[in-house]
Image 1 (cartoon, rainbow over the protein chains, first blue to last red):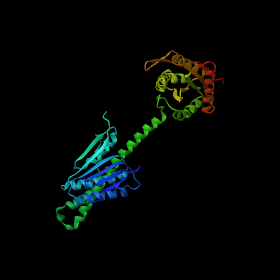
Image 2: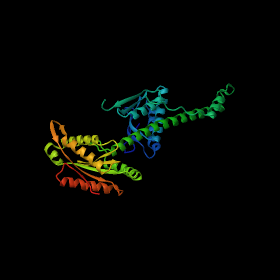
Image 3: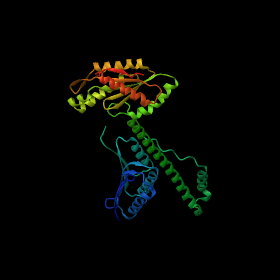
Image 4: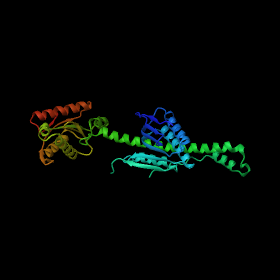
Length: 128
Length: 235
């Protein structure tokens, strides 16, 4: 299965999907013209990985801003991982956020609210 | 701790559908399977929708907060914390129309530190900046809370004094001049003494720029007359 690399832009995150490590990384801000088009290959990749590989899947997020459509797409992606986790697949989420950005942390907690898979929120940046 | 997402609003139609699907009379009826699936999908979609709204609201709140911070930064002089020119021009129009409506006097005070270049040359810009900060503090403390205090430029400070005629403003300016003359700023082991020249003009129903120009002219005259003094523009 192929890796997928989408270089970041001002309005879309850098996406690195690494099949050999079972690692999905999204970093940046997400408010692309059409979030559904942007996220479709990412969601397809995750679906294919879960179908073809028995390895654990890690979703590593470093997203400081998401528009409404991107939020919906990310919930869909989390649903996909959650459903896989519920049938016994190893899947987890690591959400990195800025220590001094309270609202970003709150957003991460809200994404975590409805899922049962391991979901770690990592605060980064200098400690107070 | 974040507020949990709002629960979906009650939906009597969905509840009725669930009741029918749960009726033992229809249990195991394969014809109802698509409806069960639809009800589940619909519930899930509503839940996702509510969650999306809630998270999105939160991001918007964050943007709004950042906008307020930016707005404040845009109006404040970074070095001294006084108002900057932009904030002053936003405020002066309503102040002027108020003073005109009530036929109340209003004065513009323009102060400039004397020979400030010598301070920068002798002590360096870092210390010069500290002196400007101290001057701004003194300037703000010597004036009333309702006066608008502005860092106009380099070492130039402007104040707008509402409800104040020329003699009143001259007294306030003299007090400010005298305080600065008597203050020794202690900065990084240096005792620094500065003086200020001040020009004053009463606003006379023209555009605000005219009063500012008049105060500026009076300031130039104060400099010409030997600095460290207050000059009131002749009306």
